Length: 167
Image (cartoon, rainbow, N blue to C red; front, side, top):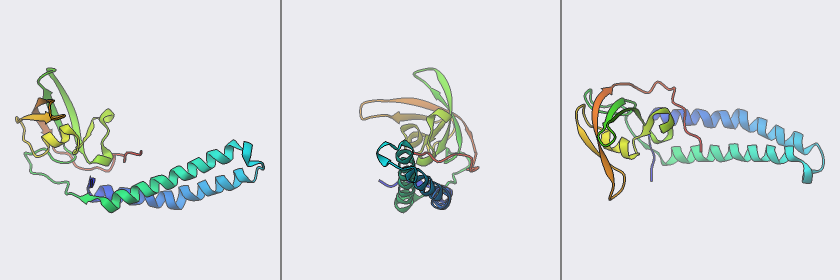
């Protein structure tokens, strides 16, 4: 499966890779050297912690490089009256009689705790391209789902403040 990313997502990932290779990697290697110099490695917690941090950094670099390599580049523009990427939508949940607001983002920026939902999530898939007033079925599984009504669409754009999710 290819992750759908914008040019800006890829640029941010490339910047993080460069930072991790030039800054974090050097610091991690130095920390390993310093811990190794302390002597007996069998009881040297600092050495194992430094190695773990170094390996974590290298894993993140590989992850980001793989994401970029396999990405499907998408546009972040939409019609003026439709829900698009980086737009903020106010949704009325019929079953719960509640209104919630979400920002539609790419996979690497999705964070439901901050009100950001991915375009690959059930809600994101359902509302993307729809218009204000549309009643939309959000399919959660083959046998479950619910209806939402799009009450408002705020046209916002990628301001670069969303952090990339780290795994």
